[in-house]
Image (tube, rainbow, N blue to C red; front, side, top):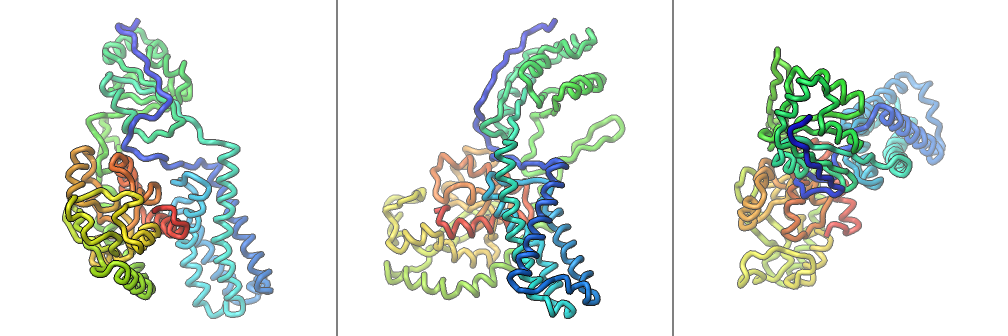
Length: 480
């Protein structure tokens, strides 16, 4: 028998956490193949629609030398890029609408090689406009089909509720849930053990893994995951795993002294040792930094040229409404903690903080001007930050920069707050598209959660996805 009976504390609610919800959804093989078929169906529908609109049949490609090979290569590039982006492996979407944004962003990126091929190959001249129309419609068709698939799957097969048992010393068991990515529907069973090593030793002496009290509790509560905060004897592992796997319980160990703060880990076996190798987050590598800079400049320079008339009109409106200065400069904390002057169109009175000092901006500010209210509601006041991106102070996508006055407060409240400064701050970001633009200081922990999620899962595609959703929210004024 065990020397002490473990206490069981069950929770149906999520504990306060620095991890954002939702966690990425990993696709199984069956759903990956289903999505591939759905995408092909959407693309086939696009080809049919393009033929109807243009009154031309694409079967003439068979009679044009080399045309079929060019089209096949372009389609293959699309499929391969779609797969490499991860559209058949995982999803960050929280709704069917989010899946549309993801599909449109992925399609826009993946269709570029096909678009270039179809535009420059002279043999495709007779049907070029039909092919280009089919490409555009395919991006829309794939997104529409994915929207329907997501909605149907969510209704027929809602998200599986995780039932997680956490076992170990009381203080560690108490700390673990706050660091997990949990949904509101997940169920956590905490099983604190005062004498973990003695309990394991007795189970080994008796030779009965099934007699371990906390393992019985995990089974009785129908837990599908078991997180152990202590180390188990290596000789016990084979039998322990046979038992848990036969009962459908996935086991994980949580070494509480090792946290993946601003780094990733890989585990490798070296002889009789399991070695944990830390490495920098992908977004912190020199290659990623260069890629983000090229991405920023390739979009910012054309945007400044195209938006020049709008920038001029807004500047004139601000001046006529409340005089000079048109631009508002404010010190913000950027990459590696260095400060810079952020640029915005002025939306408040010139003397807004002359008596009060720094004040946290909120929705419905009484200090805003008439034009300022419109600019803040539409986020057009942020457009001058494109010049910050051009100068290298900011990126298009990243954690939103804060004023040094508040940074000092937040870093005392949140130990991981400075990790936001590992990269250039952004005009928009992962937290920006999941939360309102103006939030209370009590929501800073949640905003940090989204910022850390972005750092840990970054890819160029994720930046494109964020920009697509930001553009959609700008059109519907939903982020103000």
